[in-house]
Image (tube, rainbow, N blue to C red; front, side, top):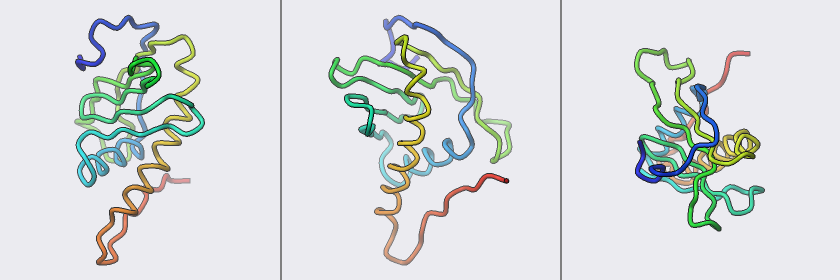
Length: 133
């Protein structure tokens, strides 16, 4: 278990997946920007998203970074690139589920912006992964 989450009571836990688009974006950002990324989540007041190798954690910075939601135990092995990544989601707050979609949407926009700003001047650009319609 991630050290930040030890001794924190879990309100609810569920098996879920993260989309291939989100997984790929975070992997690229962690390689090109920093290994550990912290994002302030707009429209979610005091919430930040921490992106690390073993966990993605939404924390409340007004409460000394107490976790609200965490994605853990990612299992990317044995899947095709376009398939979602199985994982476990822990909710540490009764309203934690309400911030999941806003968190992922904000993460996509902010990481995309940071990657675009960090693109080499050679004209190389980050091309977003498109879902089949």
